[in-house]
Image (tube, rainbow, N blue to C red; front, side):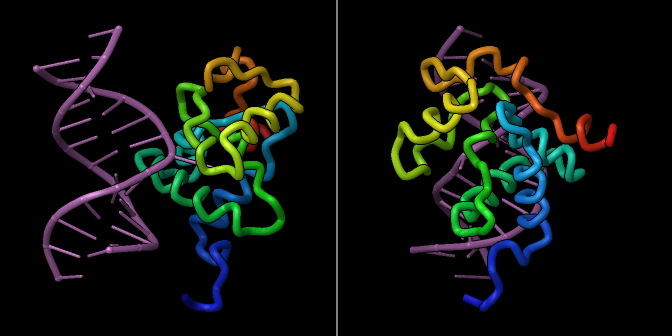
Length: 117
DNA sequence: GCATTGACGAAGG
DNA sequence: CCCTTCGCCAATG
């Protein structure tokens, strides 16, 4: 491994940067982030970036990022399988059956929010 | 260096 | 409606 941190990679850094800008109580999807980065077909890369997110500082609120279905597809990657929904619950986001309730209401689209400036 | 695997997503059967 | 396939790109075996 190079001495470079995961954040050194522009794509990763960009993903982290966007994720950190997600307001409390809001969530977004991998596809939305990928779309904002202009690589909407590379939603998998966003997920891959998240894989490295836990090793990056400042902390990346990866719990605010779910798949387009609002499902906590990444909860298994947290310290515990319940940590993710617990964190979301603290932000008034209700999780039912691994799916965010009223996901559409809590949805925060960087393409819209960051474009409107 | 090719094959497999992903925290995805959309489309097709 | 459930399952499979494909595309995207990077990391890993």
